[in-house]
Image (cartoon, rainbow, N blue to C red; front, side, top):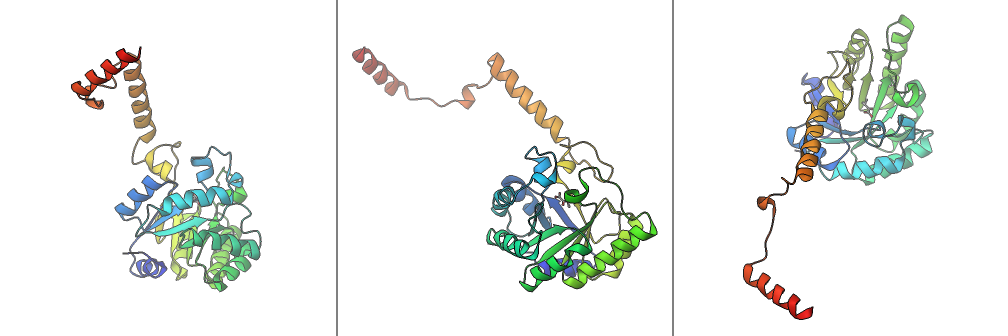
Length: 276
Ligand code: KIV
């Protein structure tokens, strides 16, 4: 069953946690969809996690479209969300044009970073019927890769709560809360009809999102994440095993090999002899 925004909103109403993961390629998209992840998300973290960029500001619309198309081919049921890369939503005109480009490649909705300053952009996208996900707290496009926790002072907490309210009033359908104190995330979650998805935002959001590399154990350990696999170690072991076996001649074996029939081989050898 295809999951749409109404489905995600019902999950909030019924207090069933929403699951979301970043995804950058086709095979991972197939696995996430099969596992029943609710929101498969092509994040601009593709830049630092896959493309070797130093930070999110290097990611382009072309990068995002390329990865979105790969992920799209692997998703059947999940809600497919894609990130607006840096400056792609710098004004309403660019935001609408870029969002429409994503929708033409199969995205269900677009995520954009920022607080109150993004209200006019969300309004413009909403007027075009484009589903949006806000992203407040730590914003990698704005704050860089070093993430401090948001919502520790009265003023900052108030600002976050007001931003979330204004974005919800402007029509966002989801809100990502990144690196926000658990208490403030809880207030936002309990006071909005819009589902909140936390990353480093505690236990009381309507759902959780993590970067796929972090759950697989590819990146460094992070306080807000949990490693469910030691992929880096497993992959390194596989690469070394392959290298070793090719170098010492134990790969390939006969089991990895195809043969021509003896009669055809004999004919080939006769032909070669005649030619020389
Ligand atoms: O791009 C990304 O990975 C994100 C998550 C932190 C939600 O925006």
